[in-house]
Each structure stands twice: as structure tokens, then as C-alpha cells.
Length: 191
Image (cartoon, rainbow, N blue to C red; front, side):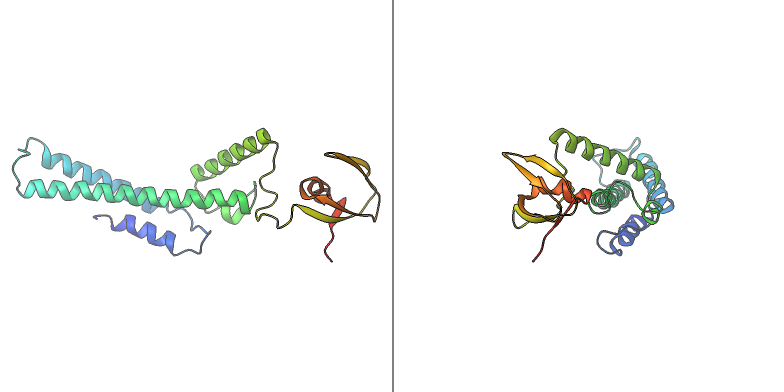
């Protein structure tokens, strides 16, 4: 009682490596909620029909129950917030489809949260016509030297046209070369 279980939830979460999640502990989570409900009942019984001005043991008891409710709520919110942060990071580092071992650690609500988060990110990228997942680390140079792996032909790249023949080398803007690199039609040439 008095927020021990809620603190255990947070300790369980903090014992994991950065970016990792333990399985959602629904049993302990429900126990903390039941503890809050019990504190609420105790609080209500202590303040019901009491003189608020009098500072007696009932006043201080109700204060302790109230503070326990607040602490439990803060711990539960911190637990859920940290889990939500890690779940959001999965979209950027793992992708749209979570591996089975990660899915097994999430409860149904968290899985739905991940799906909704992915759809919002996808919608945003579609509106911008920009893939935010291409370069997680900004490139040092906006241009890249590439080697064409298969015949592509004459292509209009921004302000000029380029003939992309097999085994030819070109110095292109990274944004122009990325679609061809991702399709396997050209590769970045590193000397």
C-alpha cells in the first residue's frame, strides 16, 4: 500500500536497457488502480460529514490518502508515458511492422497506439511528399557520387537531364539519387 506497487512498476521499466520494454505488467497496473480506488474510499469516508477546519487524525489521514492517490497517478502516468516514447521510437528505428518479440510485450492498447502513430506519420509524410525515414542521420554532403548498375536511360533531374547508362558514374544530389539507390538501380560509389 501507499504507492509501493506503482514504484515497482517504474523500477521494472527503468531496469531495462535504453529503447527496450519489459512486457506490459497488467496485473500490477490493475493492482495500483485498485489501490487508488481503496484510497479514494478511505479518503471519502474520512472527510464525509467532518469539520474541515479541525486538524485532527482524520484530517491528516485523509491528507495521506489523497497524497497516495496523487503519487500512484503520477507513477502510472510516468509508466505509460515512457512506454509510449519507446513505442514511438520503434516506428523510426524498426519500421511499420514490429517483430513478434516486441509485439508480445505490448498490450492491445499499445499495439493500437503504434498503428495509429504509424498512420499519422505516413499521412504527414504523404502530405509533405517527403520520406522522413530515409536518412535518420543527416548526410555530410548533399551530393553523392553514384554508379549506375543497370540501364535507366534519359532522366530529368530537377533543372537538367542526365543519361544514366549502365556502369556510368555521376555526381548527383542525394535527393535525386535516393529513389534509384533504394530500387537497386544504382549504388553509392565510395572510393
